[in-house]
Amino acid sequence: PDRDPDAWLTDGQVIEAAGADLTVLHTPGHAPGAVCLYDPGLGTVFTGDTLFQGGPGATGRSYSDFPTIIDSIRDRLLVLPPETEVRTGHGDATTVGAEAPHLKEWIDRGH
Image 1: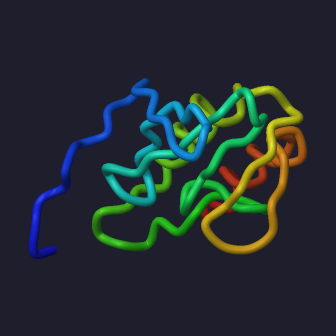
Image 2: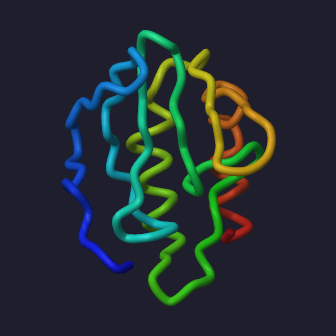
C-alpha cells in the first residue's frame, strides 16, 4: 500500500459503524492480522476469510497456518451464541450453531 492505516485495530476494541457497535476479535490463521467483527446487538459476526459455511478459510499461503485458524475459530467464534449469524467474506451466510458440530471433521481433514 502507498500509505499506512489511519489506525490499527486491537483485539477487544469496539468501533462504531452505521449505528452498529462492532467488537474486534483477533482471529489469526488465514493471515496473521486477521480479525472478525462481532455485534451482539445484531446477533452477527462478520468473519471475512476466517470462517465460511462448511469450514475455515484457506491456509495454504506462506503466512497462513491451519492450526492457528482452528484455534481462532474454536476459541473466538464457536463460543458465540449458536444463533449468531455468520456473514462470511464469500458465499452464503450461516450460523455459529450450524458450523460448530463440524469442528472435528475440519481438523481431521486438515483444511
